[in-house]
Length: 239
Length: 257
Image 1 (cartoon, rainbow over the protein chains, first blue to last red):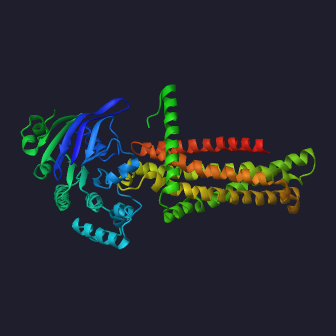
Image 2 (image 1 turned 90 degrees about the vertical axis):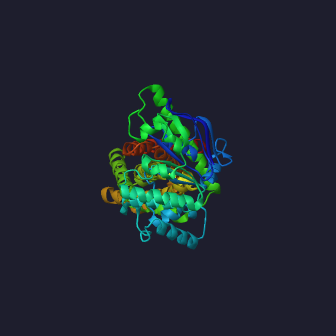
Image 3 (image 1 turned 180 degrees about the vertical axis):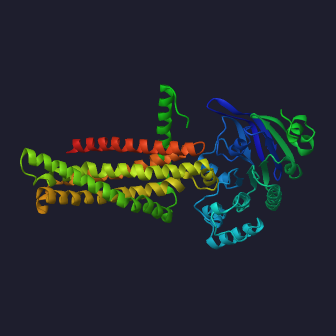
């Protein structure tokens, strides 16, 4: 379960998020949409404790993040798989080392890591690229590697920041299917930030719309498509 | 990191830098005491920081030793007509001051900029966030190997640099002024406290430079411009730290003498 209650954040005195509240039940999938700069990526960073909010409270399952120290947050983050907008693959490690990194930090045995990495590479349809470096991959391949790394430790929570930004429709479709498969495999609770509303609707139980740091709507997908502002956004109408 | 436009903004920026540096130093100390020891990463950094700086240090300190003895020899010959004591005159200066401090400056420019640029580019490409998501705190995973490597390699480079300055100075003294190498190498003029002062300074720079440069990298914001600013900030702040530490340690040793 993911829950935000009255979350606010400002940078240099400028409010970026104001009074954000929503809940994603365990095993649910929320699609977080909104124009660029609305604060979607910031919501994800607050959810994993990379940024601390100025106001409000955040829960992941039964754990409230606010009172936790940075070292306590590390344990919480071990329950999260995060897909970054800009891949965030370690450029000095091979693809296999990147994917195995979360398990290596958990001090799992090397042979178990290698086996798990190969399983994930097979699942993302990139079985032979383990020895290659991220700089040798296309954007779509990097996203799939990022997806493999985010899910290699079977996290119960998945946070995906624009996982298909800049990708062609075929790769976008493939990434969304992989996301859904891996989420179903772990029965994970997920939040997916994306502008691909057509792909989001079938895989999300709920939709939330952010506009300039304010939550305009958060509710079931069926209701979202009837909401005038969500509908306008999805159809590309200016606010 | 927007450029501060007022005096108050400038003071606030300096204060923020000092607070962040203290925080990185505190976390690094914690991980030095309790964290994992990633020896392959430490040796890789020791190679990058130390081994790859050896040629640079030998050339610079060698020329420095030659220049000091050339100038000292000219003056001694002109004033007292005898350059036999230039080794005794220059060696304590090189051991106590110029050896460690110029090596520190060279490490600050060559290594400090490298550390800030590498960590800064990892920050702006979200790699540092990815580390934090995967139980790899930057202070442990990024700063600690660089800190340990600098703590080992800066005193080692200083020793190499002093040796280069000594032999280059000896050669200049012998060829330019006819000073006997045995007379030049009068080790009685270097007392134990001189060696201690030189090595304490080198060790202090070995701690300060990676902490300051890593902090500058971790404070990088935006894109390549932010990385550039972090790099500049690293070299300015770590060079300043070398000078301030030199003065502070020299002052303490002066009181102890």
